[in-house]
Image (tube, rainbow, N blue to C red; front, side, top):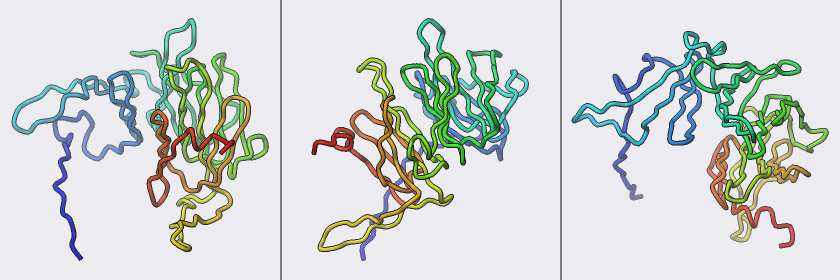
Length: 262
């Protein structure tokens, strides 16, 4: 059997090109407004302000990093996710997700921890064009913080999730279409992921019927449900929704996915 060998053209950030010490565990990566945000499991977060500048071993290139941790006023230095919250009449702020809570950050030392009604383990975060911040949790479903800081919760009981263990969440709102909620949520009651290799029957792909792991879409009025299991991460890219499961990468054409008249 012939094998194709590819030459991987990766560019590595290492040594003096990164500001964190060797052994620092990175936990999140996020791109917003031309900046790259890096979360860590115990050293706060870093911002690369010129990510378009690639490392080059042949010449010295200045990478413009900023670091925010205890010294800068961040109380919880475990940062596992980021979102940007824009509310009409206010300056946009960033939402920093921690395993056990969230912090709003307006820049520099302006860190404001947000209080919740009870302790949960959080897994993922996103925001939408109406100023809502959405958090996925491990066992507590989805938590919504509205533009006026009200807290709402969605679970198996009121959103028909397959599980209250939320593994991925993303807003698919398109700024060019105006405001609105277009939220994708994935849940899975199996820690290692429920997706299975599909079978074949008469030349057709047959997916397994798996309970307890589902994918949902919320438009602000109703929750739709599909038995698409094992999703661990989402990316909403125009008309496409990308989903990485425990065994594969999948892509869905959203207009077909949500058009029930077909």
